[in-house]
Amino acid sequence: MLDEIKNKVCSIKERMVDFRRKLHRNPELSGQEEKTAAFVEGVLKDNGILDVRKGVGGWGVTGVVRGGNDGPAIALRADMDALPIGEKTGKEYSSAVPGVMHACGHDVHTAVLLGTAITLAGLRERLSGNVKFIFQPSEETGNGGAKKMIEDGALDNPCPSAIVALHCYPDYEAGTAGHKSGVITASSDRFTIGIKGKSGHAAKPHQTVDAILAASLAVNAIHHIVSRRIDPTENAVISIGQINGGTAPNIISEYVEIKGTVRAFEESVRSKMAPLIEQTVKGIAESCGASYDFHYEAGCPSVVNDGVIDGLIRRCSIDVLGEKNTFEITKPQMGAEDFSYFTRKIPGALFRLGTGNAKKGINHPLHSSRFDVDEEALAVGATLMSWIAVKYLSENTP
Image (cartoon, rainbow, N blue to C red; front, side, top):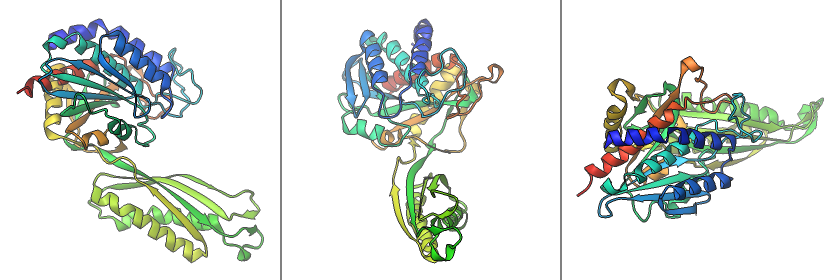
C-alpha cells in the first residue's frame, strides 16, 4: 500500500503547497484561529472526511476516516496557530497580517495533515481501523489548547489507542526525519515577580527603597539557581524575558515587574523551581527593604515519547526515506510542546520532519522573522504520516 500512498500524495502535492501558502498568508494568533478552523473544516468536508466537528476546545477541528470499525483507531495531530512576529522573508506568499507570522511551521503541520486526511480517505476501504485527525489551536501560548480539546472530547468516538504528531525542523534537510524514544521536549512554566519599593528623588536614594536595584539583584540571583542549587547532572533553564519598571531617569522606581519561563525535562527537577525562585526573591527583597509578589503558572509538561510508537515511526521512516535519512535524536530539546497533554492520555510520539534546504538558503531557525521551509517536505510529511497510520492499524488489528 505504500506505493499507492506515494502516488496519491504525489497527485495532491500542489494542493498541499496551495493549502500551506493560503494558511501562511493568513496567520492567526493563539485563540483567534477562526478562519483557519473554517478553512480546515471546509477541506475535510469537501474530501469526504466524516464526523467533522468544529469548535472543539476553542477553534479546534476534528475529523475521522473510518475503515474497519472493529479495528483500532489512531489519532494524528497538527497545531494551527501563528506567532506575533513580523515576517521578513520577502516571499510572494508572505504573511498579509502585520506583526503575525507562521514562524514555527504550523501552516506546514496543518497542510500536511490535510494532505494525509485526503490520502487516507481515498484508501478507507483498505484500512484496518479508524484514523482521527486533530487540528489544534493555541499551542504557542501554552494556555491549554491540547488540554481543552481533550476535555471537549477530541479523543472520543472513536477513542484512539495511539497518537502521532510531527514538527518542522529546519536543522534537518527536507527528505529526512528524526525520532526519539523517551523525553523529547521540556516542560514550560511561567512566572511573574513584582518588586515593591518606595519612590523618591534620584538625588536622595536614602529616602527611598529602590525597586530597580532590588529587581536587578533578584535577576542576577535567579540566574544562579540552576548552576548552584540544582544537581549538575540534571537539566533546567530559567530565562527572564521581560523587565518593566520606572517612569523617569530622575525618579527612584517604586515598582518593577519581572517575567520569565522555567524549563525542565524531569518532573522531579520541575517541582523544585518555583520554591527556589520565590525563596531567592524573598531574600533579595527583604535585604533591600522591599516587598514582593510572586505568581507561578504551571504550563505544559515535557513530551515523553512512547517507545513502541517511536519504534513504529522509525520503521516507517526507513520505509519511506531510507535508513540514511532517518535520524535518531540523541538529546531532548528545551523547547516545549503541549502535545504532551495527549501523550499523558494515550501512548504517542512526536517526531521531527526535516524542512531545511541550505542550497536554497532555507536555514533560518524556528521563531525567526525569516523562517521558511522547503515545500518538498510537505509530500514527505503526508506520505510518512499516512504510512504510520496504515502500519499501526494493520499491526494492531485483533
